Image 1 (cartoon, rainbow, N blue to C red):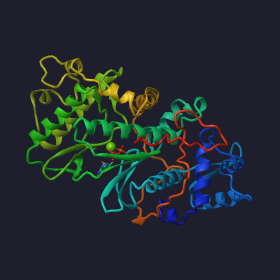
Image 2: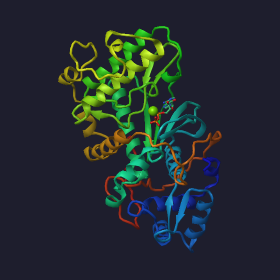
Image 3: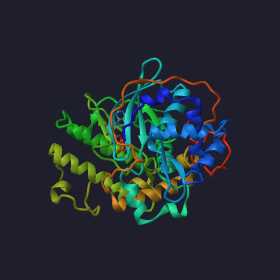
Image 4: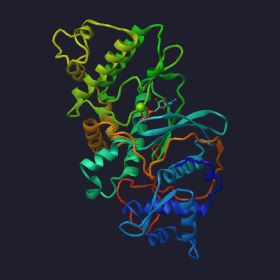
Length: 392
Ligand code: ADP
Ligand code: MG
């Protein structure tokens, strides 16, 4: 499926109204019957049906008649809703080239009205591991709203909340700008992922800085859980920026020690292999779990003793306890199975570059409708709440 943002320019208000209606319907329906879409959208003279055909042609919705006849959003449709909302809010004005393909995300450059370039991360849970999760334990059977859109929205909400809190506490992370649905807008980090760097001027310093960050995070009550060469950006001055936070957990998580040790181990391994950085414990045997005896590696237990409560602050702010628990369920499953490889599906967009595009701002008073905000919505009504806005 091609991610063609050009189509966004030609979509009318009615198109967005119907697209939003499909999204609303998906709060309570995996597949939304056309009649329900029509009822929510409230277009005159059967306009909804014509619009649905247009949305289908543009691959913004998927038609499904397996169980019963209806529609669901595609990732592209969800992308368009988020992009449109953020453009209307004045967060950015155009979408540029793709700069990253993560395990479960696509990252693009976007530009503001005054030309500032930012990074847009579109979460794509379901592209890799969610499929494996689904086959292991069918969440969808028990939890209607627990689907890929919901998980992606949760991942974005969490990432935004954590990025903001970490930035406020002086951690080197991108500046969190805004988020909507599954989309996070942040400052563009200069530099490259550490995995692409073959040589460093001061590998020891960089190594110490990175280990120090893992420890300082834990001292604040948090563990990154995916702290590795893919999620550390480094610039020409060898300044570090940490990215990618949806999987972070509190030091009081039941597997916290394992996650902490794994983060540390990843860094040791990488620096050993890539920069030949050896330390006594590294020379002992590669990949072995250390028992902490006579070991100079940061120890989780001593760090935990001094741990602050950023984790609790976060739980009290943008990201609720319930959401944290749901994400952690997902993380736990993910940690068991890890990548199952990406297999394609029409609802999961392929990563293709998108053309530079100026998007018109629309000052209409369209409600900022959201998928599966806190509690499931009532079908047939527009919600005025701004559940996906993380800035409020
Ligand atoms: P995932 O969760 O899918 O792994 P990441 O947040 O790690 O996604 O981003 C994937 C890639 O996109 C990164 O390795 C990096 O190259 C690029 N990237 C992500 N965020 C930014 C940013 N703020 N500035 C510049 N590049 C970024
Ligand atoms: Mg990553």
